Image 1 (cartoon, one colour):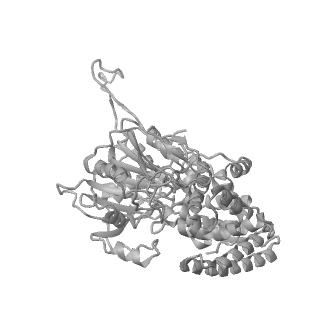
Image 2 (tube, helix red, strand yellow; image 1 turned 60 degrees about the vertical axis):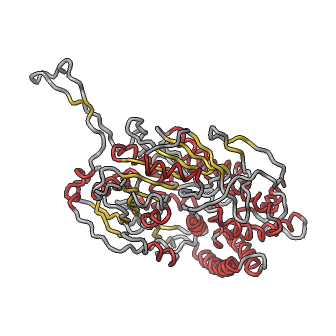
Image 3 (tube, helix red, strand yellow; image 1 turned 180 degrees about the vertical axis):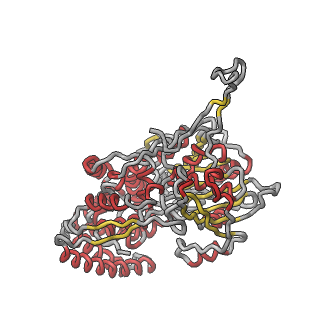
Length: 614
């Protein structure tokens, strides 16, 4: 089924005296199928933007806010757009908040364009990214302006909030179904999707006076950028897709199907070998498989997920520079499992939510006083243990309230689900997904936790949207950058996009687990990107393979999973469990984006019925 965006091709014909016949020898022509957002917007195209200082409410670190505010010529404004670009004349509008850093005037001879940036999500705030890209991509800044924006439903743009009635006796699946039903009652919900956001982007381009825009998208931002190119290819100049979803598919379902596999892959084939190479620091042994066995004996991810989330170390999956913190906490956890396997203590009881939380509290208390844990992590562990006391109290109160007629109204922000579920039809029904959860837990056992594997909202969300098919005649030449061990957008998806999207050139980073790369800090990865944006020239090879930078505390890059060949495909490499004397590759690293730490924490709170009411 095609996207709701109707791409029309009309034959412009010369008729003989109104006879309805084509005059022989007169060529036919296709009308331009690119939507004209300025014309669709009507009177809104005459709006004058009021520029003001940016506030950056999505950035929690005051030092980072100060750095962003210090970037010259950076301002924010609100743009009024139709709520529904397919019915813009109904008068219903919403607001899109944008940021812009003006590094060169459009009429300047050195000006090469304006780059729109999206950091992913769906639901990530883009407001910081105009200033951030100016600071990060210093080779591009003299020639490009940068635009960030909060997509519709997000942050400082018109927010999407939904209300539903939470039954304390409902199963997690019933609760998820109730959330979807409640959200679909909100008039705005069905317009919170990538198609409508692509129209918003094009209208912003027109208001800023640019004939074309260029684009850098990370994670979900690769899906958004591809959708824009599929619809507005004539208005798109250059595009970088970094840590890519599989944008050649009609829906996002496969991207999330692969995420548990990719997460398990990184944990067991990248992170645990890192711990094993540093037994002098973490005292967990030199055999990654043995550390895994201890991890499982300690209760596995069902027991560990609260510990990882509440200390913030789960973010190491997206940002491997956090591996030392992740290893410190994991070593405390696996030490317990080692004692279980040695018969020195009983296996933890994890049959109830209260038991899981109590077990997590015990590990956190141990971490809070361990000399092998950094002072910062000790403080986080101590604070986390106190927070769990509060959660346990809440569970006790909820247990008393579990009676008919005591359902509570809840308000939540569902942009993440609204976008991914409404961008293309997912398989419907709880039975299919319950079976999928069971099978995936066996394939990827690290994910054996309700917070990481559960029946998704998309199982109950119907849509008629689909990603439009890329047209080789209009989709611009592009670059795709992908890390081999990315846990959020699996290598398989990035490889498919980089090798199947029309005109794309693919840059693979062997042995890299972080999510979001450019600028990466090595010539192999960055120089082709800079050359592309500055000269328009792509790499000569369809596929380039670069080596990852060393992990923290290491001067070598070690082989993980397999070795990426010149064809971009995985070639299995077998090592003994404790082998560590592997080939040295390269060094240097910079940007990390798309950390899903907050997403996991919110899912935990939801699953345990601990999400705060608004």
